[in-house]
Amino acid sequence: MEPLRILLADDRPLFRKGLAALLSSRGDLIVVGEASDGCEAVDRARELQPDLILMDIHMPNCDGLKATRIIKQEFPDIKIIMLTVSDDDESLFEAIKSGARGYLLKNLEPEQLFGYLEGVSRGEAPISPPMATKILTEFASQTRRAPAGEESKRELTQREREVLQLVTNGASNKEIAVRLNITENTVKNHLRNILEKLQLQNRVQIAAYAVREGLAKPDDAKGEPR
Image (cartoon, rainbow, N blue to C red):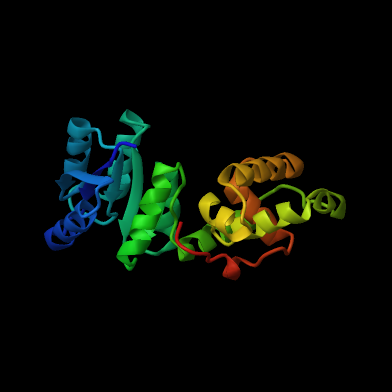
């Protein structure tokens, strides 16, 4: 597998340089460039076309949210993950609407960050557990889908319910496979069956369903790093 090519966008040089050194210590990660504000991030994205951008939100001249919108419009395949100290709801939901693939807080341990980035390579969307809880709560409160009845619940097998619970806890496919001692392909099959049976579209809706139906509480949806 080719190394993940990363662009860093943050207005604090000390943090940016430290993060670059940390990421470069891994053979599967390459920092191809840095940017000190949103405008420079857009320019560097056009020049380098990285696989992934770790983007701060609050930067001078052009903030990370505006830069994300511009980059995603021009380069929809570039994955952008917000890496920020901002944990307010407005920034979180605006980042998602702008096209961010994930939202991580800077208080991560290095190994947690590496775990999230490995998940990106597998197509996962990294969200810090406190942010995931906010998303689930918001989704569950806004959904207009009628609650599923007992018949729909009974359609799920015991194994599918176990997968449902772990998804709600924020576990990745790999983590679910380890916990249940099954393969990742089997996990994917269970997820596909759950989506079909409950007429849902994605993992977030699966988790929201579990919260809404009392199978898990939003405060419990913390999980391990993905």
